[in-house]
Length: 128
Image 1 (tube, rainbow, N blue to C red):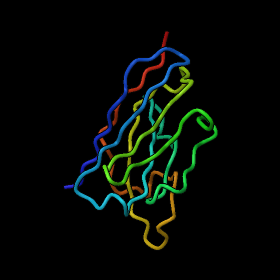
Image 2 (tube, rainbow, N blue to C red):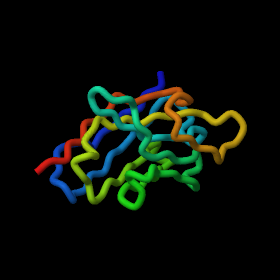
Image 3 (tube, rainbow, N blue to C red):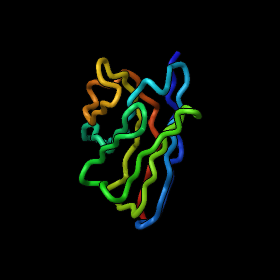
């Protein structure tokens, strides 16, 4: 059974930092591209950042570029989303997800519809 366990969320003041972790089991972690998404009540799931299977390529949405950094440690089957300079509008439930690229192992995507596996989400609240 594939499991993605997201953790590290919490309450932080504006300008603060958090590091989210996504620990995977039940899959060949190094074969899967990963993504982080977020969702607030009443809105659809929004892409945040994604990373290729090797970790050599990453992408971040403009709203978080320069503040969030996605990395992965394939030896530990874990990905990390370092979030700095947090803003109240970053408040959401954050989800990690994984998919296996069919043809190109260097691929990555911010499109949630192609992801095969999802974690349970971790709440991030940015408030003073």
